Image 1: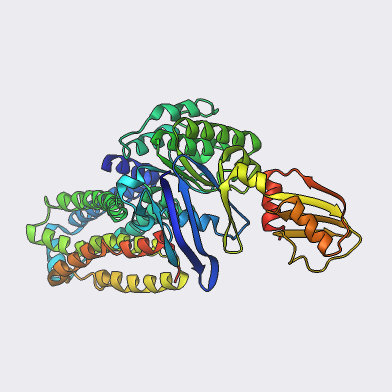
Image 2: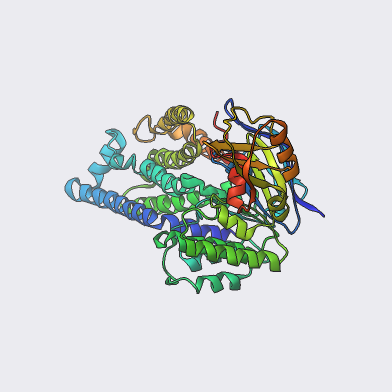
Length: 294
Length: 223
C-alpha cells in the first residue's frame, strides 16, 4: 500500500534537550493513524515538522513523496490541517471565512461546511471570536471538509471540547474519512477519543517509537496480567514485560509476551503468583501500561 | 486570491485604518485651514515671505503622524497573525509562503498609501490656490521623508513582530530605530531634496526585511 507520509530517522532537539531521536514511521494511504504520547514526547513537534513549520535537527519526512520542508502549493492543497485549539480567524464570520478559503482551493465544496454550520446555534453574521470552543471546532472541521483534502493532519482535536462536541467531531470525521478513503494523522490528549476514531496507532515514548501497528493488533497483542505475591521484587528488569507495577502484594505486568512466557519467568524466579489473570484493557489502559504513569 | 486576501486584511484592521484615515483627513484639513488662517492674518505676500526666507514650517506638527500610522497598521495587521501562531493557517494555504508574505505587506502598503495620499492630496491641492508652485514643491519635499518614514516603519515593525527571540527582537528594534531616524533628521524646508531618492530606495528595500524573520518564525528557529 502506498505511504502518504514517510518519516526517516527523524530527530529533533530543543537546544541541547532531545525530544526524539531516529524516529521512523509511515502512514499508509487510507488509514486513520493516531499519534499517542505523554506530554513532551514530541507530538506537536512531529506535526509541525510534517507541515514544514519546524526544521528537524535530523532526518526527513515526506508527504506525497515531497520533502515536508519544501511542500509545493499543489501538495499543500491536498493536505487539511487543524491547528491545536481549533484556531481560526476570530474577526471573521462563518460566511466570510468560508468565502476567504474558497478562493484558494479549486475543489472547494461549501455544502459540507454549511451542513455542519446548520447544526450550530449561531447567527450567520456572528464572529468566530464570539463562539464557544466547541462551535469553533465545528467551523475548523467544516472548513477542512469543504477543502476535501486527501490527507488530514489534526493537532489535538479534543482540546477544549466538551464530550458532546468531541463526539460530534469524531463521528463526522470518521464518517468523512471512511467514505472518502482519506488518510488521517491525528493527535489527541484524550485517548478514549482516539479509540473511537483510529485504525492504526503510533506511540512515542522515551524519545522513540514504541509501537506502530493496527489498533486491533495492538489491543490483541499487548497484554496486562495481574496477580498477587507475598514477595517484594525490587528489580523486574529481567521479566518479559515492558512495565511492571507492584503495589504491596498486587502486581500489574504489561507485556507483549504470551501468558506462558510470563508464568515461566515467575516460576523460574521463584515468584509465587496467586490469582493470576489476564485483564481486558481499553486503549488508555494499554497506553499507560506501555509508557508508564510517570 | 488577492481579492480574498484584501477582504480578509481589511476585515481584520478596518477600524484601525478608518481611525487613521480620519486622522489623515483631519491633518490635511488642519494644514489647509492653518495656511488660509495665516493668509487672513498676515496676507499672502507675508506668508510667502516667511515660508521662503524665515524657514516657517506650518506642517511640522504632522511630522510623526505617518510614523505612528505605519507602526500601528503593522502591529494591527501582524500581531493577530503571530498570536497563537495563527499565521500557520496562511502558510498552509496552497501558495508559496514568501509570495503570501509579500502579498500581505503589499496590502499594508496599499492601505498606507491610500491614507497618506489622501492626506497629501487634501493638504497640497488645497494650498495650490494660495501658494505658488515652488512653495508647494518645497512643502512636498519637506513632508515626503515623513511619509516614506511611515512606510519604512511599517516594513520594519512587521519584521520585528515576526521575530520570536527577545534579544534578537531588541537588536532589531535598535537597528530599525536608527534606520527610521534617517527620515526625521530635520524639518527644515527642502532639506531632504538631495536625499529623497536614496530614502525612497531604502523604503523599497525594507519591503523585503520581514521575509527573513518570518522564515525564522515559520521554521520555529529560536536561536
